Image (cartoon, rainbow, N blue to C red; front, top):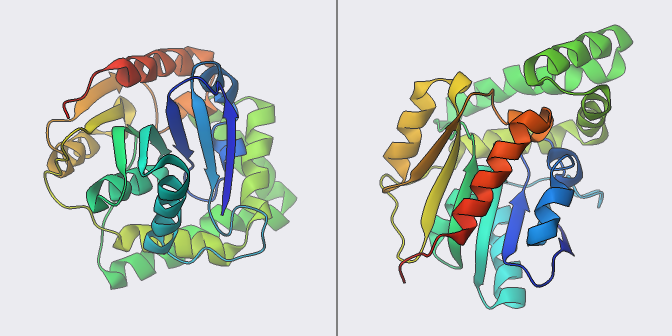
Length: 257
């Protein structure tokens, strides 16, 4: 596991948790500087995605390592944590398990998919080859790049960085991450005293995801944006700016103790 601390050391603590098959450098690369101007960032790379050569084990094992870091370095409490896509699973588990305390749990347009073992295995068999299959074929790589640029409105540089992530990490780590995420369930109507839930809702994902946010978390604050899944971190500044403003407003809210 890798924990890099940077940004404004006098600011509130904000943990950044990247999504599927990503490191924080790629996932949050376009917004790291802006976030670091205000917040003391704790940037996390999971086993299997940290350059250590380890294989990603499962969501709960990695969650325990994140909890241990917060307990050892911050007396078990941080001001905020933001999860990008799959990273939101970690935010949810950190809050639900109550080993550590987070004032503001920020969920970046997550799917929050949950399934049984057979369905998770089947989905992994289908999806993981799609995520990694283009890496050894230049024609597939070029085609995938154009799709990413069109969907997220990525720049060439961001698309290249994103695809490099997928080609750099072990397919086994990606499979374990994707599979165990589907098996890691959240309770319904989670409520923790002194914690506020904030959701970045990408409207173009569809309303079924909005319903999930309301199902799993008690009285969440939901901000809607006219964008695709996580377009604020991979698209241009027109998507990032309003979400960054929302994050500032989330972090300034007083939470009931």
